[in-house]
Length: 225
Image (cartoon, rainbow, N blue to C red):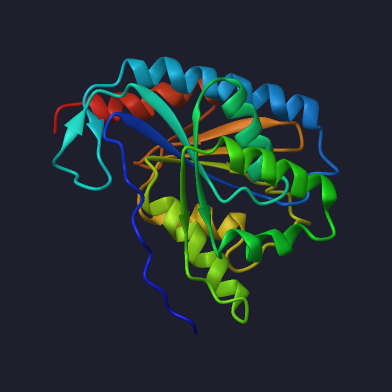
């Protein structure tokens, strides 16, 4: 197995960082309804972020500051990554990009998807921060898993577009795997099903609820230790 060290993003202690994971193929889902659901989530996140003090810091758990902005951390893969990034940036949120390879090598992923390549290029140009991992194309599973782990390393919350229906296949370094790793690390997760769509909030204690339960995550952070 190919091992690689994950560099650190320059974490802004005044931002709440939302890591993104999701399926690459969204063709069978209701994109308009999914887009509106994502807008609703980001609007709720912004409201809660402005009320959050202190802000948990991934780089140094003992450090804290007032959350002043929302940052999306994404590899900008085709499908869910790009859809979430587009919705978030249109609402004025910052975009930070994590790539498994250098940008030219990563663009090979979109060689048969001209629309996804155009969207990647447009969103990449909007990003405020970029980090490139030293993934090896000969070990793609390792490279994509390292990217997912890096997203988790730099996020406070994971937002996942995840089809949990029984017929859906899931693989190593896929969306379900990254969600499982986040929950194992007790990271709050916002699961968005692309089918209805519906939202399931899982807080750091494992408690679950719908979008109205999003505030529970922030209440737990604000609760005296």
